[in-house]
Structure formats: C-alpha cells, structure tokens
Image 1 (spheres, rainbow, N blue to C red):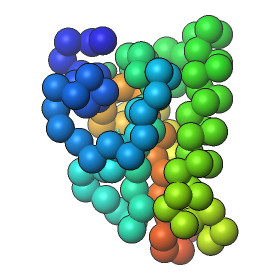
Image 2: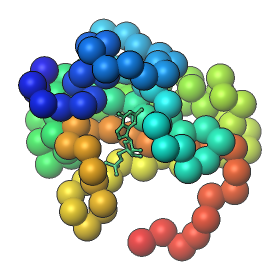
Image 3: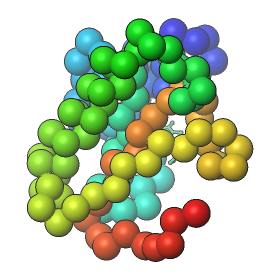
Image 4: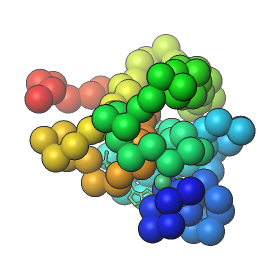
Length: 115
Ligand code: 5GP
Ligand code: ZN
C-alpha cells in the first residue's frame, strides 16, 4: 500500500467506493465521473504506479485483470454489444491517478478516432 494513493485507500476500504468485485488480486469499482453507462475501474490490489512499473512477477495479476473485465462485461450486459478497455499510462495518455487501472467502458457506441 502506498500511503497517499487514493486507489490504495479504495482497495483497503479507507475511502468509500461502489465496489462491484474484489478478490485477493484485484478490486473493481465504479468510476466517480462515468463517461459511459458502464464505467468501471479494475485495479491491482498491489500498488503499481503505471504500466512502466510492471515487473515480470506481475504477469499473473495483469492477466487476471482481463479475466475480471470479461466477467464484469457479462454481468453488466455489455458482453454482446461490446466494450472498450483502456489503460492510460503517463502524461500523454492523461493518466491522473498513479495506481495502475483499467477502465471498462460500455453501454453506448464508443467514439472514434482514438489518439
Ligand atoms: P486516468 O485518467 O488516470 O486513467 O483515470 C482516473 C479515473 O479515476 C478518472 O476516470 C476519475 O474519474 C477516476 N477517479 C478519480 N478519483 C476517484 C475516486 O475517488 N473514486 C472513484 N470511484 N473514481 C475516481
Ligand atoms: Zn496505490
């Protein structure tokens, strides 16, 4: 746990959130400012600041985030219509919270172009 990290505090329950899933590896909760009908953030329970800080030991954890995304997409009924998974990393991507997270967006047609 990183002392001043808002997502570490959400994982530990110190800061409230609308949690939709948690297990020993990851926690998922609704984004406070949703930009789509479904907007969930999936985070590793371990503090990893960004994709730049991923270590080889984290591979199982990272893969598990995708398995959880798939399961939540099914629960949110966006499994068939489709959804977008986004991991922003660093300033050019607009990363605001430096605890790695995957956005799960769905429930409306996503806009293009990306980038
Ligand atoms: P980023 O731009 O870093 O990829 O996205 C950070 C996301 O975290 C934003 O979509 C923002 O709305 C969300 N967020 C920031 N603070 C909180 C919070 O305290 N609670 C929740 N649930 N979401 C947050
Ligand atoms: Zn953290």
